[in-house]
Image 1 (tube, rainbow, N blue to C red):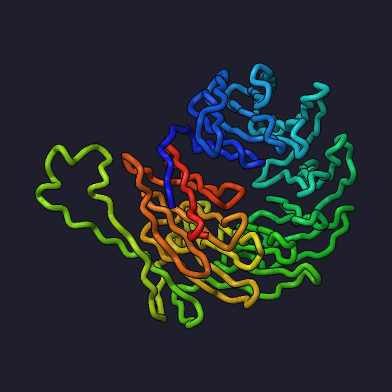
Image 2 (image 1 turned 90 degrees about the vertical axis):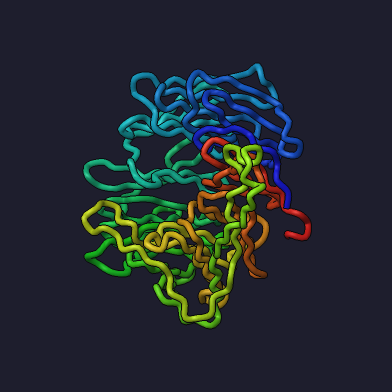
Amino acid sequence: MNFSEVFKQSNLLCKVSPDGKYLATCVQYRLVVRDVSTLQILQLYTCLDQISHMDWSSDSLFILCAMYKRGLVQVWSIEQPDWHCKIDEGSIGLVSSRWSPDGRHILNTTEFHLRVTVWSLCTKAVSYIKYPKACQKGVDFSRDGCYMALAERRDCKDYVSVFVCDDWHLLRHFETETQDLAGLEWSPNGCVLAVWDSCLEYKVLLYSLDGRLLSAYSAYDWSLGVKSVTWSPSSQFLAIGSYDEKVRILNHITWKKITQFEHVASINSTKAVVYKEVEKRTAVGADDLSLHNITIGSTLFNTQSKYEICPSPVQIPVVKPDPDRANPKIGVSTLAFSSDSRYLATKNDNMASVVWLWDMQKMSLVAVLEQTSAVRCFQWDPRRPRLALCTGNTKLYLWSPAGCVSVQVPTEGGLQVQSLSWHCSGDSLILLGKEQLCLCYMDQEDK
């Protein structure tokens, strides 16, 4: 495993292009595009204000930079650096900007969610979509890029509109059986649209492309309900994370629950491996304490850590949430399937330092990773069953069915890893600190 030098970035804005060739980073109002393989700067663009959001077009030819405070979007071309585009939403404001799947249209959502404006880069045509709903996930495109589902709110009722992305004509418009729609997501095969209600009512609805209700699922009533929803890449499973600290798995044939995974405080299973991170501080000699050796951000006092396998039963640290506060830190907030749909990784918010790994073939717990700090982010390798996670310290953690490893990130000044993302090849990782980033390259034997 090798690490690159450290580069600057702002607001964790750093993305690899979909074709895997370029790395774009934002530094205040500048956009820097590097070659992924050499990390040499290829293009440097200057925006009109500090960048709030940045995204690649699907063909990796254009980059969108949104400046929400100014209501501005600037678009830059990789192949033609002199070409540029500026979209000004004016006094109506801007809260969200994103590419359409074809990479030639930009969808801007105005302040107060008054409308979605569709701008064409080719014809300069403008289309408006009224009544978009302000919710957790109100827009989603099908994986093949053909359809867009949009949550709407009008006359105190929830609706979903399905648009054809080629010319933005309305294909279907239907009312949903929700009290307060919180999100929607297409299945990876594009056949089914999952819609879920706010946390006040436990309801997950499954619609066909033509708006027919295929199934409705509710696990319980009169308590906080759905917190997270995700599809498996195979479209066979829909995982629902709930405030009752359980994950329920629905199957794609009957849309009934086939199993549920519980996040218990005491693990008695002999089949699950519990990895516990153990820290140890290196002994510091008198010679090491000279002023010459102690510098700002010195790695001298970094703690080393390793994983130990704990025999069952194992007690998991639980933090009791404050019942008087809004958005209590309890329940399953993060769900992620491995690329082959074999494993599911979950995080239960009142066990913030623990990641749970479930085997979807055996429908059972396979591993538990107990960290010394709260888990900030985890993501699966896009090519193989390997999970990377970070906890806001100077370490990178990796799990695979073969075992678990803790790696010190050897950067000058100590990069506190706040977030991470895989390169689409699975050969490298981008590690993001508060104002810096570096790349971690996997060796052949690491694979």
